[in-house]
Length: 210
Image (cartoon, rainbow, N blue to C red; front, side, top):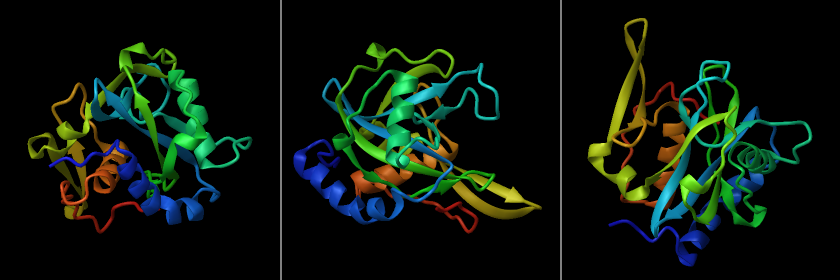
């Protein structure tokens, strides 16, 4: 059964569980930060995603991601990076007091650290947002109930030199496939929001960790 993730009690529980990591990691240098926006779409708890613009330069163009980007020297910390990037990409201003905490950092293939920041952004209509066309092609939400259904979960096994290296999650059957670091961060988020409901199946001797 899906817990009431948007209740005051659910928020307090998540903030309490994230407090230690947030205090430890918030000021630590990182290459980038992303916001994991927990929202309510027509009363249904969901996570908000973006489809990166196909016009971007780089290997991640056209992929599903959370709003975010590189840390700027002017940013006070990773939380401010995530909030700034979300405002620039989506035109969505999230007050700092709506931030629940910092999730476990991940590393990309170049060993750059990416810090996920969980925030409750309240009731939201993704179609009402005005994303930057230079950075975002589409904004969409996936209900937590959808992400938690086993038939919408998959796993990709990666091998190097003919030997098993690691397994990463994939979330299927939405408007777009969620994979890569975004899927890992989604998995961390589901483990926090729905303990006992979401059962990860990662076999990851080589899984990047912060």
